[in-house]
Amino acid sequence: MSLHFTRELGHFTRELGHFTRELGHFTRELGHFTRELGHFTRELGHFTRELGHFTRELGHFTREFALYS
Image (tube, rainbow, N blue to C red; front, side):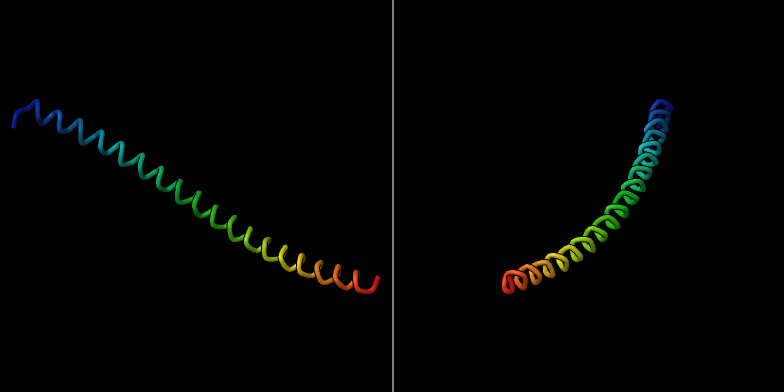
């Protein structure tokens, strides 16, 4: 192999290493974001379920109120 080719291969390998490291950082941050989004979604599900219970009870109350008014 020529010295020029070896030098170019070294530059390419170094740049590929930088890119791979940055991709790792991005992937880690994406993982953190995805985990937080999962927590938020779970909490939103709990809230929605409780809102459904409240709405059902309000419907029962409204029906009873209408019957006895």
